[in-house]
Image 1 (spheres, rainbow, N blue to C red):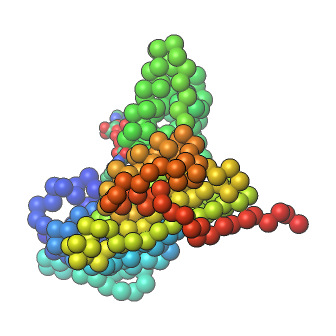
Image 2 (cartoon, helix red, strand yellow):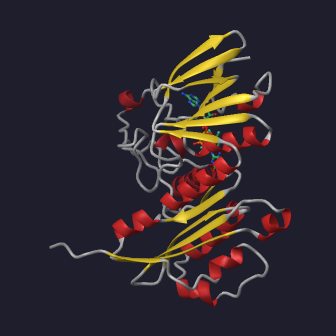
Length: 308
Ligand SMILES: Cc1cc2nc3c(=O)[nH]c(=O)nc-3n(C[C@H](O)[C@H](O)[C@H](O)COP(=O)(O)OP(=O)(O)OC[C@H]3O[C@@H](n4cnc5c(N)ncnc54)[C@H](O)[C@@H]3O)c2cc1C
């Protein structure tokens, strides 16, 4: 054994790696880290940034990291794989911070980019966007009016349902006589790690940048099932609320079924539900989700100071 691979090959390994090092801190790296950890491998995650899950709410990142570490996943941040050498059947991985780690396999999950070279975009005059994808407007139309692009190749929100929706909207607009823009705001999304993460809307930091007043409600608790099973795992939930309009602008969950919960919270957020709407909704007891409608105490209020 002993080669490096990406998520393309992860389910086709000839042999199960007892020790695996994964470079990357995004959702794919973490999903595979928890799969290999759950199957009994010794897992080390190496990530160049300050903390895993860049772009997610900072407390979600901290909570998930703590939960992954509790499950025995080693997480090394602010460093990268400098070199991989093969010694007999094992790999020696030299990290940029001078540590050497022995592993059976090394996985790279450091991100993907649109495959747009050598397909004649330049010759056709199709412009690229700032994020390296094909630039399109809200109808997925490129700079050349009769050329459209949908999905990851546009590097907008790289998720399957978003690509499908963009394709559907394109067909409606161009062939169905029904101009249909795609709104990429408030896309609910999940990380299928163990525990799961489900998020929709703004992080606390994004809300503080965008809004004059932000109220934060949050809760950390042991889910009932974990209590009964005697497992030391905690669920985290946070609501980010616009302090002036009372609208819930963000919801962040780490815990069992977070993906299922965020799909439904996504409807409420898309409908611009307020914190008062959440509070007026009766709890379903005993569930973890009931916490989302019973958070009464603000944990923080951020008020943006007027510029001097
Ligand atoms: C490991 C992994 C896990 C993921 N998990 C999730 C998830 O849980 N939920 C979710 O919503 N999204 C997930 N995604 C993202 C999701 O897969 C993408 O957003 C989605 O597939 C985008 O669809 P697409 O049609 O734009 O691109 P793709 O599905 O990538 O399809 C592009 C197709 O074009 C082909 N192609 C590429 N270049 C050329 C070329 N030059 N000429 C001809 N054909 C070409 C490719 O072979 C491919 O078949 C995951 C992605 C990865 C890598």
